[in-house]
Length: 242
Image 1 (tube, rainbow, N blue to C red):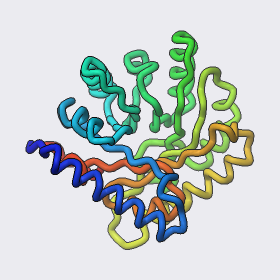
Image 2: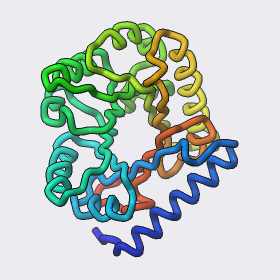
Image 3: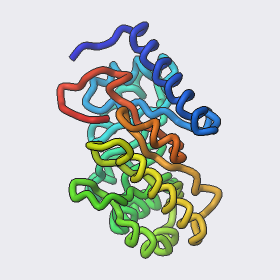
């Protein structure tokens, strides 16, 4: 695994930011509305530390253990990124990371939301979360179906110490042009539907969708957070589309 020099990584970050700005302008949006999350999963803590030192303030991790380890290692260096947990979170691992993520993107069930609520009540702090939705119906994807999230939103909103900030989705790998955009557009429609279903409008602001191969389509459909890994950090030792 090759580690980019600070100069190379800075160029990568600036290139991605410029491409995000271009996509936003094409969609008639302000680029400042869009948060770039650098996905540092599977890379050593040194990669994450270097990216943060170059101004990439938001970093994403897939696994609870890996994020917890990097929180501690970067914290020991005096570095405090805004950590985003973007991968599947098992209920039994909530205890490990409670209080650490700035935003948990992958809340895919009422039971997981309940466990997060319980742990954050104990810590006397609040969790910012997104509800992961699977509007494409793809079996390999996690998340609430459209019907499930509508059915459960009232109970989710009743859970203490949770700020439910919006939705997250992952589009299937595109085999034909427009497939990802259709998923993002449907997710945006669901976001708007839920906006009128009793959510806290002070919190309900985020749409996390779009990765390296489809973030332009996501931005055109209203994404506020895009998750980019390879274009910033390089290729991983593990095959991964982010």
